[in-house]
Image: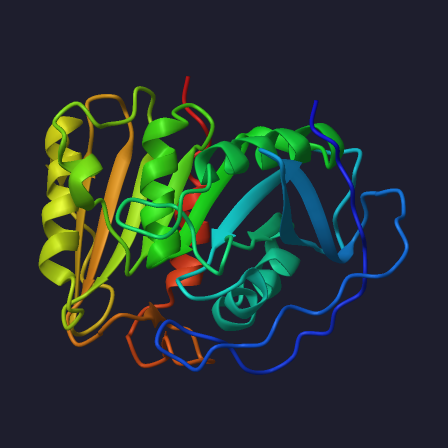
Length: 296
């Protein structure tokens, strides 16, 4: 049986962010010295979960409107490599959005600052960890199991695709930024989710991986027998939006930001921010998630 241990400390939202390619950050803020009983409630929480013989750390943001007596949506946000959950939270603005829309946000830390996704990094059972984390938050924080979502950037985006396939039925939708359905595992024709998982993804036209990301999302749609849907008018100059509906009822939205590199569109802080991209990925991802609860 997993042993659940939690430390809760208050955190300030500080400036700055680590990014893939930036100078390495120092370690995350120290946890409080005393062990306390976890009591769900609003605030910033630094928590741990024992999984696979390893103590995994994650940051949990519960907005002021959080009510432990009502089911809440959950967004799990996965950082790039090298990185951590705190740096991602500072960059993408999910906490501020959660305060308006009243959902929980969890920011897991990868082991050695990365996740075992589709092309890197490490050997940890990160899909199993995400499943265990979801189960824990459903049982202790009253998360709505039909409204659990994954979003991630780069390495974290790759893991979102992997978890969508290997933990089919757990996550209702994923939002991938500058990441992709790539690598040898994803190349197998039978590698696809067995239950509906909707996808929204953002690809930079100047990203060095743009061809791989586009090929990957095309393979995803081919395997799930997705058919194009007429898109809304272009969301901004230099941004191309395509939409598709798949045979299992899931949806796919692809934003190609033509002048963007390996970045998060609309983010305003950190080396991987693209404030002038023309769209704000964080807002669009949540809007997509809110419209896509888990399908039977």
